[in-house]
Amino acid sequence: MTDYSMGGSSRGAVGWLLVALAVLLAVLGLVLVAGGIWLITLGGSWYYAIAGVGLLITAYCLGRGLIQAVLVYSLVWIGTVIWTIWEVGFDWWAWAPRVVAPIVILIVLLLCIPALSLRKRS
Image (cartoon, rainbow, N blue to C red; front, side, top):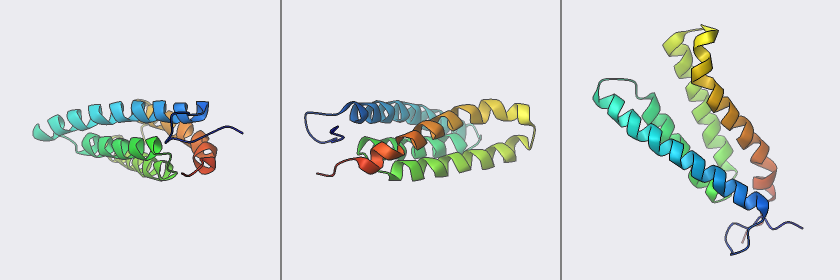
């Protein structure tokens, strides 16, 4: 049986993939928070800072192997769709740069659900 344990020195391949995804989301979250704060100081949208915080929370939960990572990111994704509608309306071509990457991340996280649900608790 594969060890999904996140706490010990032996991590299964799935555990390492979850950690790698958590690191990627943390880096993206930090970039969004930093850029978002800069944009706020210029009088721009708060979306990027809020989405960045959501990614950081998602990364934390994912790194801990918590299924809540999917819930938190789902809220970020819903917020992204609402922001997209608010910003560009229903111009589908304008949606592409705003929602393609978040949809890819959502799909990857949804694929992680079995690993998060099956993760052994210590």
